[in-house]
Amino acid sequence: MSSDDIDTLDPAPATAATRRAFLKAVSAGAAGALLALFRARSAQGDVRAPSRSIARAGGPQGAAIASSANSITSTPGGTRTDPEGVAPNSSVSLLTWKDARGADRTVTLGAYMYQYDFSFHDGQQVVARSANDDAYGHPGFGYVVSHNTQTGNSPLGKANAPTSVAQTVFSGGHHAIHRVNLVYDRDKEGDGFGIKIPVVIDWFIATGRDHPIWSVTWKIGAAANPQGVDFDSYRMDVRGPYGSLNFDGADSPGAGDAIGGVAWGDFELKFTTTDAQLTLNSPWTYNTPNSVCFTQSWAAAENAEMGIVQTRAADKEMGYQDRVVGRERGNTSAASYQDKGNCADFGGDNRAYAVPCVSGWPYQLMNFDWDPTAGKPADEATGTKLIAWGSPYGWLGASSFDLFDYSATADGRGDRSYATLIVLGPKERQAPANPAGDVALAIQAVEALCAATIGDVQPGALVTQVPKGPGASQLKTIANGYNDTYAAYYLSASANQVAFTFTPAAGTHVKDPIFVVQGYTTQQLPAITVDGAPITINTGAGAGAFVSLNGAAHELWVTLRADLQTPTSIQIIGPPSVSIDTYLPLIRR
Image (cartoon, rainbow, N blue to C red):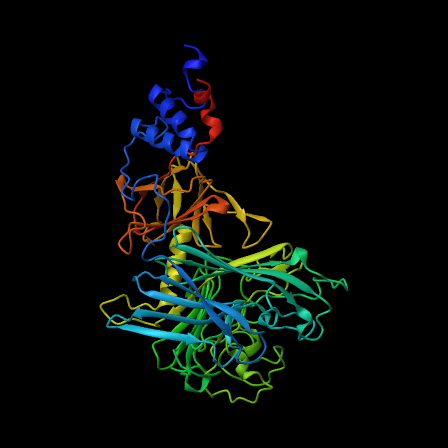
């Protein structure tokens, strides 16, 4: 048999009917020809398809990825102003999505978040809540801040007008990214020495997920440093996402609830206050096992909390450790430990009180309400809703900085990135529902995401390297395809197909995982099977998967609507990619 009798780029025989269908369609244009040919070949069968038959429950495989009734929407929101007058006026958009309950959530986003409207079920009833930026602390949320060890320079990132704000709702409408580019100008306050650091922030929203993801890249390698400041001496930390929202639903600062308590977690242990209202003399524990870094605040009377939960586990680079390690950490307020009640070396604070020194908390919250220069009594409560992040000094820019437990050092140069879930919801739920609040549930979810494994990948492959963060040019290595930037699993397709086994760790469950399939070169809807059974795609709230296409990056984003507890076989099968060159032998014949 000669090569003229075989399509050399496809092992399946080229039939006369196929050639006639293709040649007839060519006159209508190449795109139409290829579509006609694909449909003809689909009717005959394609030897490259997996041996197991897959039903296309998501609709015909040639269907375009169109928005559905529960897709994400973005609408103009006018102009918002900063209540404290630091940020320039900003045009905002209202990004609305359906959460895990199928209810609407809306974030008002510009350079940062101005408002968050959502609802939750507390075990007895549905509670609607609006968290606005007219709050004590520093209004608005999701901007960056960096302190340093040499001067008091620590400008609020919202003072910088962004260089660009772009919002992308992927085709299909179930995944969206709101990206903010800015230059963090340390000269917005004194002793900035001309240092200007490019920053990229992504807000990631997905249908079926309750909480947005905030991720950041500080591009310290591209920083302007005209005076040649030594970043090993001028040691910088990071405290974003940063800011204040009335997470208790108050209309104004004066109407807000007092803070009931705070908690945070480092890579290994959790701190929490244990009385009904936060003061400097609140009792506490700092000896509960923990693996996901987080920070949390809750209201005294209202069933409300706000938290920042990192999307990776066991990160020793997060949290400021200088005071608590070797002192409060691993202890309780009732125990004896080194330097108990002595804060003279931390901000010149000569008072004695129960909680860790005001300037020594690993993550910034409303602790500086009680700064020794503020005159606030130690037993007085606070209504400040400020919540933020923290890192060791040197994390940003230094050639070396200590990990949280001083077990090793790390490099603070280059692209510096991390990602967090922004969690607002109830502190607790009533029986018979799970009594845990949303921050505790988010921590459990991240633990499960990080512990799951992916194997038996065929066709396709696991992705092993991705950009360090949004807008990063440097890469990071990932395990089991898990990319913490978007809390999603990354795989690469072979001929628009990937199949694998997803295995949650023993005793955990992974709810509604997101898979990003790279190298997906068609603009059409895939078919998906779970343990051999086809599932519906983008058919509304009851769909088995929510699928979007980032066409520019050739990425298919898939939220699988399932609560996975055991090894599960997943196939994502797109139509094969074809080009005019593939079928030139047919034209010649």
